Image 1 (cartoon, rainbow, N blue to C red):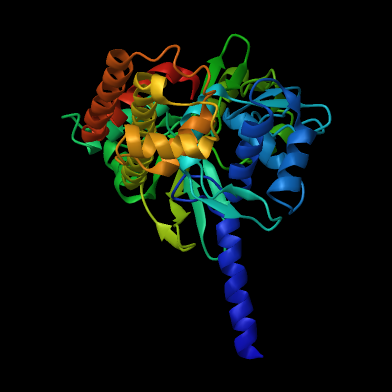
Image 2 (image 1 turned 180 degrees about the horizontal axis):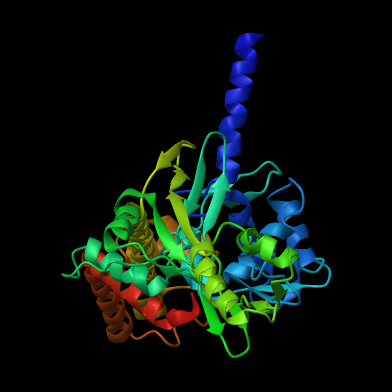
Length: 445
């Protein structure tokens, strides 16, 4: 019994980690991947009710309860576009979203290009519901590194706190890692606070994936009005936790506060005591400087392809995702070449038929026509099955109208040559694809 309990406990731990930590392949937790996949399938062109997306996820991919919390988070990160009240994380306390029957979502066009452009080449698995789904999405960048919110997860004995960056900064860093850029760009995580740590600390996160940075919340002073406006708090804790360091002043009526946050943090602190207000204002300025100091501790723990937890870093994530995306591009180009080769063979067959129309009796059964073309016209150089499929693919009475040997065959061979050249310089082609996407996205992610 003791061994059974140990085994079950271990299996639960592995299962918990897989569900709660992002994958190293695409930077997503299973529920996030399935929400994006569902949005990709049913809400690409128009907004639809969040409840419908939630139902699609539960009914097809993730039968573990409502995923509306994940939908809200993906809207707040900018990966889904939302209509309606999706709440916010600004001010003293996060504002709750409206019920999912009142909100609508649509997948962000840039996420479509970033995560789904090569989805057909992702490995497929049969899930618990018996439905085939992609094992992973096919990103150009790990999605846990993108967006305006730190990615967090708590597993079984592990946690992750992953910094997020602007996508053009990630691209610059990737170019340097690939040897395409001489000077090393030190890229800073996205935060609404001022980062006061030096470059050494920032590089530690990029190269080692573990460490902390010091930040300071931002506030503005208006001495003529005896007020302060707090514009940001250090992340990972509620704003109220910070200003409660002034609890004594609030209780004594020396200070008062109002949370006016809507689309951004805007917490007003007012000196309410008239007597000695100037001195109180100066003291409060110094207190706020100390109160709004904080640290962000990062740990990049992810799930590898075998289901194990591994500690990694930003640089390794960028390179491994790039190499994986190159493999998708190779598959894509090779498939194009194979399709062109098939088309070339088809046209050889059709042109051979056109030249010998006077001796082909198209009124005969198709099997006899195939045998005649195979043995008499093409001299057994092309497989009989291919000839059969070609004739059945086209309307035999009309397939000769637009065939021009010198144009069709030449164009196809030229296209195959171009694709082969593309395959030879697949790394450069992939870098160019990255550059075009980053330019297109601009400041949207």
